[in-house]
Length: 288
Image (cartoon, rainbow, N blue to C red):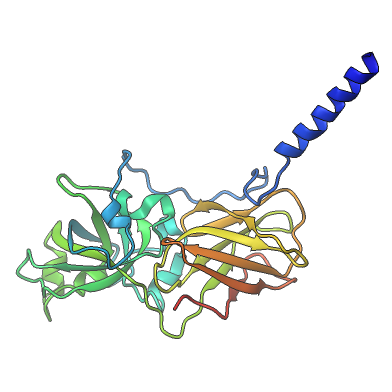
């Protein structure tokens, strides 16, 4: 009788260990995870703005406030809380970027989304919309009475002005604007993956950029060489996703992207077997 009970206990322990064993890239974090720059300190509350995060083309213009940061004719900064770094000042972003308040930034899941923004509240406003990409978190979050806020690059805010009136508009303080979600368009550009410097065979993290259409991502999965299954990656911060289940990863990797509206796209074998930390790898695909 005692032997039967012991055997039953061993079987139960084996089943339990299988249930809790790592099965996905996001199962645990390694102690060697590199330190990343924290997003600027800001006061936040739980905020839901379904209109701001909705699929583009689903509604009309919404009210918001706008300011600019950085130099008057600059790119705003070094990519900030999305991790794009100096790419914000280069094509295809070309300095037409903005930091977004909490309802737009969405804890980093709003990175890469595109918006049309226009103003008419200032005499310097042209009344014509400009398109900006969310690349950072607005450190001031929301000004009083605002449902959303765009802290734009000096270049982007100035682009809303009448000819010769850019400086006048930039000196106008908080500008009342209207905005709406629009599809991102990067003609001739393919989705690009920039591998984090702290990556290694047991810990893979990459920044993903230049997605047409939704622009943002809500899920990423990785498939190793010789595997038929996709391992879900975890959202790390900004536009970066990680895989660290504690097992050695076998390249080349394919990556499956799921956009904010649920559209899937696969970049087959985009990471070669000899991928390197800090490397940049351009895929052959993009959303239509």
